[in-house]
Length: 177
Length: 221
Figure 1 (cartoon, rainbow over the protein chains, first blue to last red):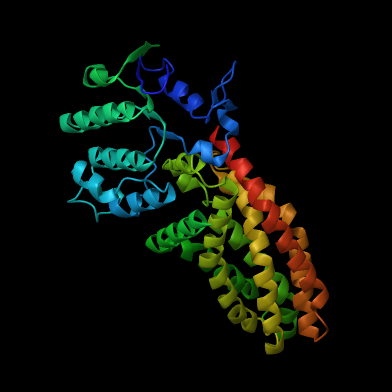
Figure 2: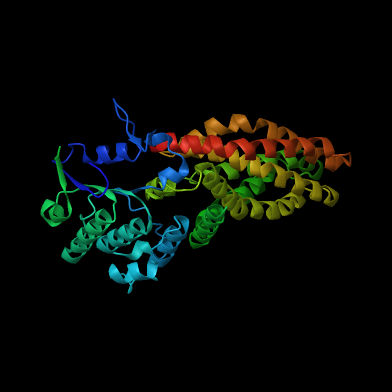
């Protein structure tokens, strides 16, 4: 795989999709071999290189006591993202609940807010772990669109999912575990 | 530096949205210190002798209690994963979190301590020294407790383990802290123990965040 490609990782529960993504993100050590990013092992990246990787796992990374827009504003500044949180809120249909604390959101809304935070990061490599789990059809379309845009811009993405059909158009490689 | 201030601001905001978590260790401090005279004797001279020890022990225990959850909420909601994959050095992020926590939990403790001290008949002249000594000691305690909290972030029932890990390390702070307070009560010069407390604080603040961030990384793997 190289820049501009997206891979779909599919496989039964417990086949190691999450482990694979965590190893790639440098948050778990491989039992054998090494994972490198631009020649450096992923668990020893310097901070600027770490910012090249966006990881969205099963935990959403949102602060429950902060509102949706506060969470997004935090990540946007923290990552000095290029995209405006305002546009994203519109795109994710989160405008209505932007001033609601995350703990009062539904699972789907929370999932969309987390994806929004991920999108704010100007990263080259996206590692998404089952991004569609709680999303509705329009949300899934949006993620597929983002993947296409990301790869067209030269980005790299690895997505673990059970909803193969909804993302297969945006992917160029398929890996079955 | 920008991300340092950003984390600081986020943690302040979070602290005020869940202020009950902040109030608990403070109430613990007040209650432990005020229960002591009930268990011992209410005699003024005996209380004055025991006062500084009781104050310091309760401050120590309450700061451990306060820092138990420093990294846990970030680890549980996934924020820690995002912070690790950030362009800012993790040590700086950890330092910001410790500082934010010290401002919202340590500073109120500094303000409450003189009130408790008066109820132990400590002379009013000793109060400025007590506050300065606590102001120098609590950052060290916060850093030590943060290292403990980072090591136990993924352990169930981390609170008790933190005590076992960290309490032995707090001995120097306790010794110099109580010494400064006792010297102030007798009216002698307190500079010696205060300088040592300041040295400990500088040492802890410069190396502690690095140790805590390494522990956080290990815990996340």
